[in-house]
Length: 154
Image 1 (cartoon, rainbow, N blue to C red):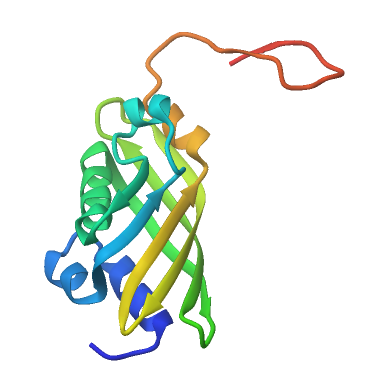
Image 2: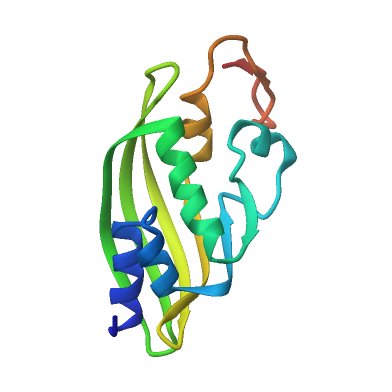
């Protein structure tokens, strides 16, 4: 497939679990960052979180996400890029957790770099607090965030 970097990123995000699409449009030595660079606690909740290497990191992440949640909406909103191959995507998603049936809505953002017709870098961000809460089955957190406030329980 030929196309602009925006076209390439749109195509991959429209079918990210399809090996043929990923193999065609994602570089073999690409880097995929999901949610953060590396957080061992978050990785216990969402095993794909962190930095992955190789084209299969992107495909596997989206395949795992489809196992952990039923994807009810995944809407690409604004997608734009420049002549250097940089692409930004801002969208909205709605997922329902497979085990607990909890629904979460979240904005998401993707930053990607395309070179020679292939994605060489992609970073996916979302409301990770909300998506992790879709797996919460009990317990509370005591949060101390406001320097002028009191602890809260969530």
